[in-house]
Length: 283
Image 1 (cartoon, rainbow, N blue to C red):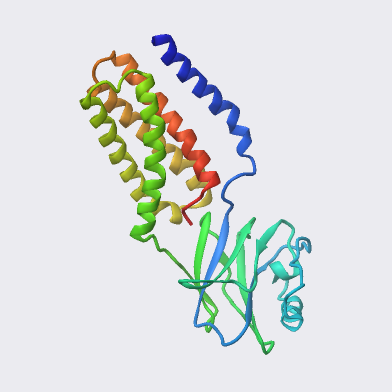
Image 2 (cartoon, one colour; image 1 turned 180 degrees about the vertical axis):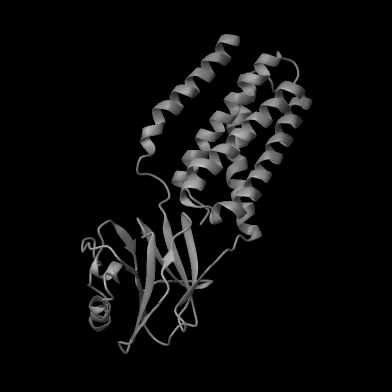
């Protein structure tokens, strides 16, 4: 039994090491979302203004109003030019017509959005509106409210209860499945006390993690979110759960309970990373 538990742990560590390079270009990409208010009547286009000198990756003009596109192409303010309409040095995706949502029309620019940007809007009659202020992208998922009258941007934060519940369900269920399977394999699922300890511990840690991330992750900077915030939180949870399991799980040695805590958390972390890359929720 001891050899089997150690083999499970060693296999998991090996998988973690081998899977690390596979996430090179997978998962959620940074984006800027503009949610429009005080919209002009009729058709209008919204694009980002950037300072780079590239003219690659330009929008395919087919299906767009040529007069309105021309207004965007012709706008020049020093080095500032329309990003999607005239192109950028790096890939930038997004539709200048926007998408209608329950919160209003949204314009999303993703993959490699600019660090510094302004906004340009053109209406059906060819009139052009431009934001004067230069905005610095501060978050991985940047959502801003665009006032189409004043052409000003303000940060938009909205994490409703339904989204918190969705995130909790999306992380708790896979965690219970993978860690529950390991609980059985480690021979620790033999009494009611251990099962209740396992359930309550995971419910508590996942609830705390979900609520904390729901309010901090959308506001966190790119480096903080990916390199500091999540790894630190996962390490804290690993230590906390391992201490609880070592203290309260019964029927097996303390060493096995400790090894289970570490192995279970590594397994659920690996699963969580895959889920985050394949099915991103926040943003």
